[in-house]
Amino acid sequence: MELHFKSWADVAPRLVAVAAGRAPADLVISGGRLVNVQTREVLDWQVAVADGRFAYIGPDASHCVGPDTRVIAAEGRYLIPGLCDGHMHIESGMLTPAEFAAAVIPHGTTTMFTDPHEIANVLGLRGVRMMHDEALMQPINIYTQMPSCAPSAPGLETTGFEISAEDVAEAMAWPGIIGLGEMMNFPGVINGDPQMLAEMAATMNAGKTVGGHYASPDKGRDFSAYVAGGAADDHEGTAEADAIARVRNGMKSMMRLGSAWYDVESQITAVTEKGLDPRNFILCTDDCHSGTLVNDGHMNRVVRHAIACGCDPLVALQMATINTATHFGLERELGSITPGRRADLILTSDLKTLPIEHVIARGQTVAMDGKITVDCPHYDWPDAARQTVHMKPLTADRFAIAAPDGANTVRAKVIGVVENQAPTEALSAELPVIDGRVTGQGDTYQIALVERHRGTGGVTNGFVSGFGYTGQMAMASTVAHDSHHMIVVGTDRDMMAKAANRLAEVGGGVTIWKDGAELALVELPIAGLMSDRPAAEVAAKAEALVAAMAACGCKLNNAYMQHSLLALVVIPALRISDLGLVDVTKFALTDLFEENT
Image (tube, rainbow, N blue to C red):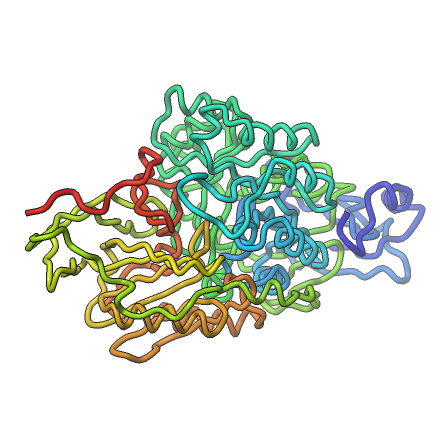
């Protein structure tokens, strides 16, 4: 169990006594309209809370009021369950679990199911334990999914550490582990890879949930084989047909709205138009950077978006509360305002626009009118977690791409960025050769993957298109899903070297340079992934980063997220790794050049 929070068994006698009127409640909320997500009703009911759990719900809770009972007058506002994020990565917020919690609590998020596979790729099982331990210290519910794939695609990338089936089996005994993180190595599952099957077996033997990640458009035999392997959910769908295929096969369809992933509108029609059972659908964020969290919201933003896409507000709330809790086997613990569950709820004056006016978690007020009212304790991150960028100084020559002998132009494979989606396109471009080196032109510029875990000095070079960059610029990031080496994109090799060296100097982060000067920097000293600064401060730097990208010509929505995923070798179509250019449609390394002219 989470620290400082009693189990149901510990408090059951008092819950029973309060509900029966034999003992007073700690808290009673009256005069509100209770949204019952179990039945999809709105009831003029009252709520009584004792020891951090709901003891009574019904028309009249006056029998639960004693001399020391706190009474909140809801004044006609709606009482809705605290919101749950069914799939997410804390590291994508550039924040530690404590600061992430501090950022999302005012938005009504009281439960998160997190997969720390980002830090697993950098620090291995030890890093996962650090995330897990800080998560348990928080005043809200943060459950950890043990990462399944580090590396995400063996043979196509090299990570700082690898996760084994033995690691997974060990972690299943940790108190905050809820299941297995997204199984990204879907080819491994389809082909019966013993390690992948062993990881899923260890999870199911522990009675826990296997997270899915099926990024292929194929819905035939391969998809069936993947589902048979044990994955219980999937968040990689981008179209209505994807959502339908998943729920028809017994999976939960997780529809995401992150900082740059807009996959709800294209899939929720499976419910709003096709009429499929909404209890098989879950809302999540997957990846949100700190600017989105602080300025736009978290799960409240996703619920509002689902409603704007035509979803009934009560159905949308089910998708962000009881559906999620039920999926992870926690329907008796959270996800609804019903007796015995954790007293996580929100007071809001409107079910469509969903203003988050008062947030209660485990029976305690944790936020009021957008301001957090509790502390979020921090883990003492050791030096080993802060010294993870190992590389020698780079010069512009390390980013030079030699042309075949005698070539005047070269046809090269190009990674094509797609706005608001995780997949990329596999493009090609005819590029000029100057002084024996291939050079980008127009909206095609260079990308490099710099090895930063073992100090090998390795640099893989390629080309990318779609950001809209102009002038002499470069952007570098040690957030490089999922291997988390260093991604450098630029129109100028000298700028690329400066950006890369800057991140080595500060111990990781994101930086953008133009015309020889640094425009923005977000320092991420913990594993090269997370800041140790407050959420608002990190959000301000993240917003400055977005503005700097725009100053370099980028017009895409939250394009930093696209930048950080260019090394994700499990999502089609074309990616880059420390081993070379990867054709994800074939799960194989591929040559950079197509032909010479």
